[in-house]
Length: 271
Image 1 (spheres, rainbow, N blue to C red):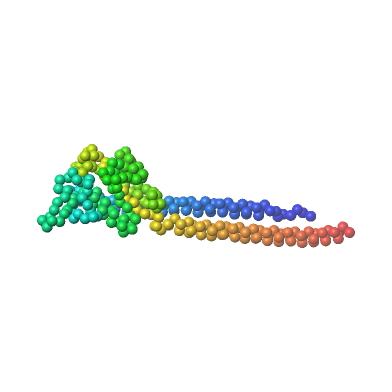
Image 2 (image 1 turned 30 degrees about the horizontal axis):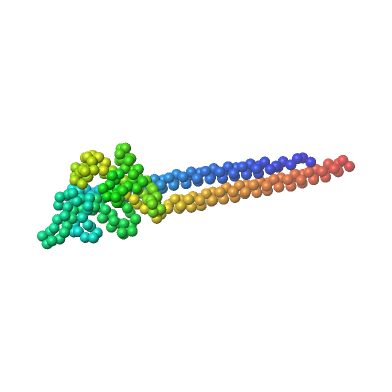
């Protein structure tokens, strides 16, 4: 009997092709996930940067308005007592003709009260005036702000990034330096500042934990595409293997029939 023409080599070859296609498909999907997530991250950071910078521009515009007017007078009450840090200023406290007591607020005092009102609204948006040498302990810099302020002294014009704060939540943080101007010396000359010095900065913190996580959606969608591709490769390969087995089975039956006929013919002739 002739040796069978079929073998397991074609089946093994199909299996290897299937494995190679699955690996290539997995790498392609993984590469797509990487680039899409990176793109989402860049878009997210750009949006956060734009929001933070807009808030900073508004903050500094309001602050400069107060500075340009030499401060503002407001009625004295429990929430707004005269500032002990301004006691050396002439006319810090004045009275109207009707006897109402007014006190002078500088830009830092005004903005601190405004930012406290924002905090009370539970917006979690935080705006903080800070310095490496603050007059008011409330303006003491945290670790991220200290790093940013030192970077400004080294020539950096802005610092930003995502950081987890003491409350355990993640924030997009943004900060630009405040440059000392002549009007600033009214309150800060005794600290040794000169015009052009970096006096501190205003840091903006925007919560990011509760924003939609587009990364998870990206993983789910790519996971579904990957499964479809793997299923197509598997079932396509299995169909080819089944077809090959069917062909080999038919060839084996033909060989068996041929051998039987030949044996019958040649066997009778030999008798």
